[in-house]
Length: 252
Length: 252
DNA sequence: CGGTACATTGACGATGATCAATATCGGTGG
DNA sequence: CCACCGATATTGATCATCGTCAATGTACCG
Image (tube, rainbow over all chains, first blue to last red; front, side, top):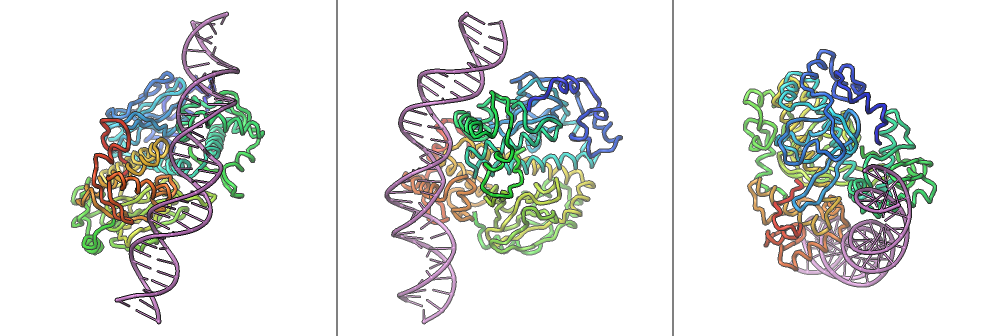
């Protein structure tokens, strides 16, 4: 889940959308070349955040939408009493900040996990562009729909799944996302501390730790801190449900 | 939460958007009169569903987006193993089906709880309109952002809150929504069976029942089946957290 | 080499799930 | 009008899962 250094360096250079290696995953994927060039005007390329640094904070006015270019980030919301819930981990190509559109004020915070470079889209500029480029507006809408569907999957996990199932579902999801990005689907580094992962899954860190230990004991995977090597995808699949024909459940 | 009969009858008549009593809550709220008239062309007014009837089913191709005019509905997703998670209860004015936009295929199901009348928006027609009316596209985007933020609140509840807090948060949310619609915020009928509500909150029906009984015993509210009368909003607020200055937490 | 942050492991207890029994509502038909 | 039925809700007893708290272990960084 943490991006290899080679990719990190390559992507954090200032690159126009039309030459960016993420253009197939990112907003330009639905745009014509002319439109892509227009979009570039709204983009501040290659802003970089250090681990722990906020991209934006809940409650702050919406100034930018962000797209992760390299590195990774988490989104979280904070309740009035201070409890936090991590609502997503973000890999390159993902668009952050859409939940701020309604009141032009962020309803969640985003924090870099690794050293993370992003494209920042000035909201003002972006909003105008959307009005002028139906394709772009459409693309953003698709992105919002995707996030909605993913959040619903996560709600299902939180509401119905046991601790063990949650862990397995998460690992399979990461596996799929890594593979989609051209990395190994069976061996990767998680980019977040255990406590963040546990919070995301609605578990106590100790519980998560025990479950990973159990998986290891059962020969499903090897864990070493944040490094995961899945040795038996079938067994991992089996543990998400007794249902025989379970096609991968996704959190994203 | 169940709509009084008078309103139900009034709203289920065929009414143009420009004269609909929901126009302040619904898509036309951000449109000019001319645009509203254009929108009406995409709308099939006054389709009615009986309790238990599907508005759409998960996996089905997206044909219509729906707006609840009267009555109520639930949204739910079904996992590969058959477990279900209710992800929302919908009152008049709410737009349903946005999560289907990405793949033009519904990722959740919607089922009427009461006899429910809706406006159905032909997706084809609607999509064209969005390209032509930036205001409309914008309005839909705001709606999506609102749903996103609400889902995130719900994730917080599922991940961090105790059973008692979940129940209290839900009741306060319903209270606020009822008041926003001009009904009493302290006395209302829930439109869903206990099992649905429990599922939504990630609890067992028995647990929810016990918690409501406890609230009643503590003098916080009266429960009679689906009828709720809140007698002490402050106490209800108090039970969502020990934090002194907790401004209402919302699920919506 | 020592310190700090992070992760694991252990012992214990509490919260909430499960299962089954009982109660209540609403509708139907005698 | 009352008796009966099914669906829905409540209540009780029991138990498992998972959270809490504390102790121990391990990597990383100076």
